[in-house]
Each structure stands twice: as C-alpha cells, then as structure tokens.
Image (tube, rainbow, N blue to C red):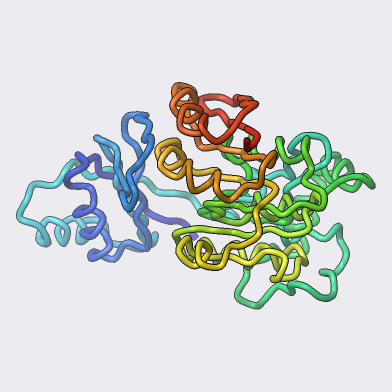
Length: 332
C-alpha cells in the first residue's frame, strides 16, 4: 500500500501542537525529526526534549483527499501553518526493507545479538519462552531470504564457542546498535562474569543483564524507573530461555528495600549526569574488589564521572566509540 507523507517544518514550541493537529485530521502516524542535525544530549529526569527546529511528518492513506485535508487543517487552527510538503511514498514490502537493514551483530569474540525469531531454521526450543500470537514474526520466505543474505554471519554465529543473545531490532530500550550499549557488550565479552551476581541498573531492554547471564553469571537483577522497561526485560529474558528467577526486575525503591547480597559487579548504561548523582548508591551495591561498568558518557564527560566515583573506586579504564565512552572501575 502506498502512503501520502505530509511534512511541516516547525519551531520547537509549535511541534507538539502540530502533531496533535495532524492526528486530529486523520494521520495514521506522526513522527518528529530533527530539521537541522542538532544533537540532543543529557535530558533531565522526566524530560522529553525536542530540537530547536523540528520536522513534523504525518502519514496518510494513499486515497486521502489532500486538498480537503489542507482545508481541514487550516480550519482546525487559527494560527498560520508552515508550508505543507506532500510526498507519495510508493508501495513496497516494508517488512523486507526492514529485514534488509538488520544483521546479526558480534560484540567482541564470542557474543552475538540475533533476532528472537531466528532458530537456525529449526522450530523454537521447547520450554522457556514460546512466541505468542501477538508477537511479530516474518514469513518463512522472508526469514529464509534474510538467512541467505546473512549466511556468512550466521555461520560464524553457529561456532561452538558463540554466545547468542536473542533480541529483536527496533525496541525502544536498546538492541546493541548504539555505541553506549556496544561498549558494554564488548567489555562483558572480554570479562565474562562467570559465577557472579550482577546488577543491571537502568536495565532498559535487559540486554546487559541477559548478556551477563549468557556469559556465565549465576544471577542478575534488573533495575529501572520505567515499568515498561521492566516488562521488556522480563520478556527478553524469557525469549532467551532464562528462568525469571535468574533475572528479577525491580523499580529502584523496591530494589533498595529488597537488595541484600552485595553484587560482584554493576552495569549502569544511563547518562553522565545520572551516573554522577547515583555514584554513592551504585558503589554501595558492589562488594570490595568488585567491578563497575559505566556507560552513556560523552567524550567530554569522563573526568566528571571519574571524579564522582573516585572516593569509592580505583583502577579506572576508559573505552571509546565515536562520541561516547565507557568507564570500568574496581570497588575499593
């Protein structure tokens, strides 16, 4: 099915009103995008910042009456509208286009991330998580074509010493494609936490805690302020056939009340400002000579983060990727 795409350029102050306007006019979806390649760094707690100049993009059915829609939009608001730019998006296989862009990803030597629906051509494993009817899976034909395009990567992923984490692309909470997550996954691959108890603080999708378990941790705990993140973590744990008891998830206040055993290590892929604020709390979770891995830190921020953790830690080490860094440290 083809679609009409309507794009309006707006100042930040008007963007959300325009979004509501397009939805009221019958848009199937509305997306807000950066109009000037302006980065957004370090939002405050509870903030959802927007760029100074925003592209507001609405998607309409291909049989939409554009002239009537424009009249309707003008009638819905007394304020002048930005120029309306229409573009016809041709019909295409959106699922196949999406699959074309996703490949199995290797982090370090042994650790891989692969979509949860891929089982090497075999049926899903018995026990653990079974995919429900509400969850998307590609057709057998699309999955086979995807496997053929990625044959070499999938062959490498089938090596006896490979560790495969099943996680679907496109989740809001992270799948390993962002440098902050990739830095943590590579560190875990190089320092497998065999037999350890690990806390994934700010767990998001649960990818780091699950990776720790697959790499040999005996136990992990996930902590996040967003209940949806806790749900995603639990779901992804199940998709990797891990018992829920091995990766319980908590809101911070609940975890603080229940946490008793000192952790061997803490993973915290958050943001520098939050890491600095939580430094005493995060360090209090870790036993003497245990480790911390901190990520979500911009290149210009490691000194400030290290200064906050200096009273509690030693042996700081920095890894870099693009504009981001991770910091590992040992608890004193």
